[in-house]
Length: 190
Image 1 (cartoon, rainbow, N blue to C red):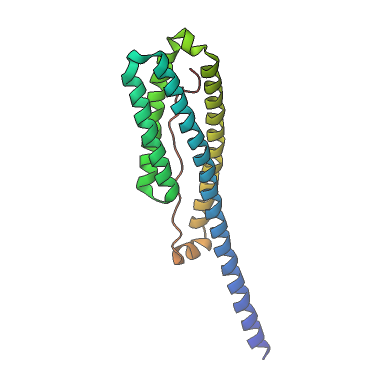
Image 2 (image 1 turned 180 degrees about the vertical axis):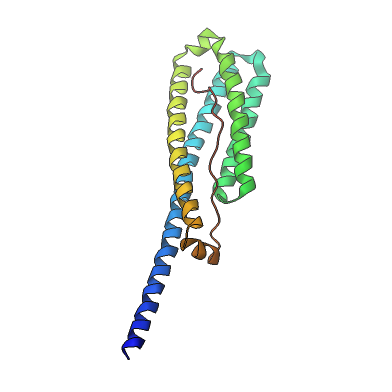
């Protein structure tokens, strides 16, 4: 009879152990998804600011339409890619499209800010200076959020790969998360 109780106790203990592993995996997955949502919020604010900068630049620099249009186009592509990724954060191709769109946007922003640099009235306009300061602050928040996201992804992926949580991860089809790698550009200040 004692052996039966010991066996039942071990089974109950094993079940609680498996439940705790499963709950930890769910918590870690929720944490990195939440961290991405923080990036997404800052990106949305950034895209809105970029639109404001483009509109202000259009008024002052009408002959540089190609650069302004390129920024508007890549901003819209990045916004769409960000929304697509936020809707399905574990989609590998959505993450690649998002990172490509962000890289393209960064390159075009560099061109726009180089253009703005050549127009003293535009560069020193109080509204432009305020927009540039806000954009710099948002870029800093994105860097911090991206770092938190990547740390949570690394922790989650590590947990997926280590024993015994890797067994539970396979049983319940937990998928690896992707690191958010973005090229750094120098577009934080016109």
